[in-house]
Amino acid sequence: MPRILGLDLGSHALKAVLLDVGRSTVLAGWTEVRRGDGSPEESLRVALATLRAEHPWQVDHVVVAMPGAAVATHALVLPFKDAKRIEAALPFEVESQLPVELEDVLFDYQPGTRTEQGTELLVGVVRKEELRSLLELLVASGYEPRVVTHPALVYRSLFVGRPEVLGAEGGSLTALVDLGHLRTAVAIGTPGQGLSYARVLPGGGRDVTAALEREFGVSAVDAERWKEQDGSLAPVGGPEHARAQEAIRRALQPLLREVRATLKAATTRDRRPVGQLLLCGGTSQLAGLSEAWAGELGLPVKPLAASGHADLAPEQRARGAQAWALALCGGSRADRFNFRRGDQAYSGQLDWLRGRLPQLAVFAGVLVALLVTFGVVRSAMLGRREVAVDAQLCELSRRVLGTCEKNYDRALNLLRGKESPATALPKVSAAGLLAEVAARVPPDMTLKLDQVVVDLDRVQMRGETDSSKSIDRLSAALKAFHCFRDVKEGKVERTKDGARVSFQLDVLVDCGETTPPAG
Image (cartoon, rainbow, N blue to C red; front, side, top):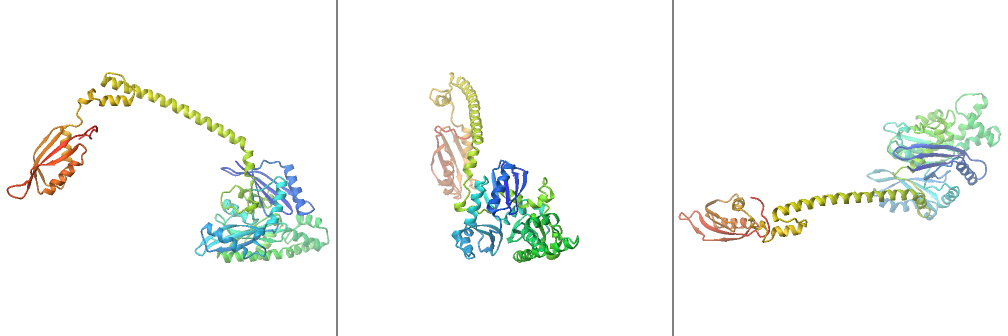
């Protein structure tokens, strides 16, 4: 049972979900590590070290998404349905939409709906240098990922693998919005089928913190603490809360406009309305956010239920949604989006196999032992059966030949020999030859036999038929029997009335060593 670790490399906190993936998927661990001050690289390195020190989990595979807004997303339609033709044409299409050279980026795609016009694709692009820097940091921290995926397309694992947690609305699309600290991921699709649109938008919780800092003239630390403890869009509290509420609303307004435009683009692309919007991510825990956005967007907005997180507290369900989706993605065999391609492809498979060599050696030993046991048992059974066959052959040869013979070929030759009692037995009988003659007369032939003389070496026939052609047909039919070696025609003449033909046939019988079938 592989253990998949989904790591959400959030800019504010590192979230980790560990799953045991087998016949059933079991939650094996969850944690959240706050990132401190300093550069993004340094704070992430410290958070990963803290995670390893506090939770020394045994992990088989690690799955992460590109952090921040480092990923560009493009929705394309190619006039092909065959995967090979899509792979061949996609680089040219991607290059036409990039402001940089194609050699400087890595891209992958997620196939969507196939229509008469072709195949809809969601394509993600990232700079090679950004991916390389992230991989170096993760490898140095002991968390080399097998999959580096798209922060929005990763939610396909929820739409396809866990549609029940999305509370699907019949006939409409579902939008999942992950409100992070620096970026917001939007995934839109149909639960149970997949995604049809995805985007990564700049903006999130940091904008709210900055707005509170400017409004009240406090430090960023105090503004962050107040946001987490008392931040709300609900119409409650005194003048201070009203000022904070207005500042939060202004801070989220640009992001809300982008979300509205994204929903409209998805509706136009899929020709179906968005029936509900689900919120997850740390910023989604702002009180009153769901109600405020429902009024602004004109559709139901609610937190992600995430019923699969049975062991997580409600506030952890929203925070760990992406880490959960990443872990599910690592355990899925469906189409998987992965930036680790080309010279950045994952090379840890050999290391994983080396770690499994003791288990593989034990398995190979057990398999060899089973094969040896099977061979010994099979040989013993065949030996007993051979002894029984030899005993039966000895009894038969003693009864017929008067001597015990256990060699089958020698016994058969003795039975066929001139001195064998079997030589006195005829190969065929007269009744059998007569039956063969009767069986080979063509059923549509007019035939009257006046005389048939059957000996063991010859059959003589005399009779009348309608024409000489019928005699030839009868001769050909008799020759089809392997014991009738030769068929000679005797005197043929017309009857006195001229309507019929009388004939004589002389058939030579010789079966040789072959015993004819029973008549």
